[in-house]
Length: 254
Image (cartoon, rainbow, N blue to C red; front, side):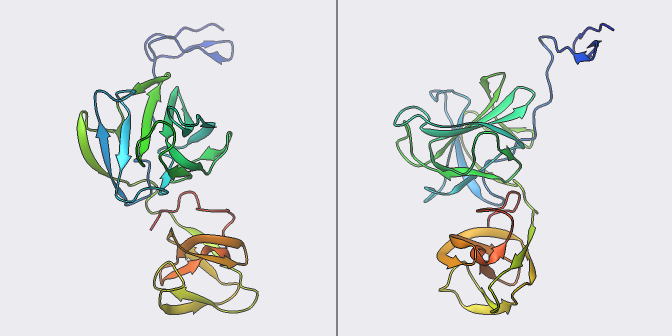
């Protein structure tokens, strides 16, 4: 059985789909590459390389988490040293679409990892040719940088605009508290210096509404500065069995 493809109509040759030049698959629904609710300043400029890239900044952003802007598979995690992108990640979203996240301070993924909305892939840095902390972000199609869109809306070209993320908003996860017997204090904020506002029993199931960083604690599951908001307050992630070592994909940042 032989088929042809004209415009966007696909036909089959045997069992294979033939995609002719000029055809295009729909772009993913890209989100702002930061946790739910955060607002970042995105700058575009004609002398950028590539010109369609966006530089994202906010106050004291060094080390802030960067998340996948659409589901896909990580296919590049590399460090170019003190030149170009420095530490960067590329995600393949299928259909010829990729995204680049450059000048990172560190990585939270490896090649071959499957990521979804809200998955933390690394942290804002100033590696490579950067002159200060920021995220260099690109959307590409067929290898070429395209003008970025978020939720289908074109980003501002050329200039600076604030973008508020709705990436993975509304996500939550459940976890089991493990303290080896004692009740676990629930605090008003993400740290041991905050007031105790309640407690949860060892073995209790809790719903994690969002996560953030705070006081570093050593607990049942090692040492971490991640704190989980369970609605009534915060508990250290080191006492919560979540199935993840680090931030939970899909759960927003507080």
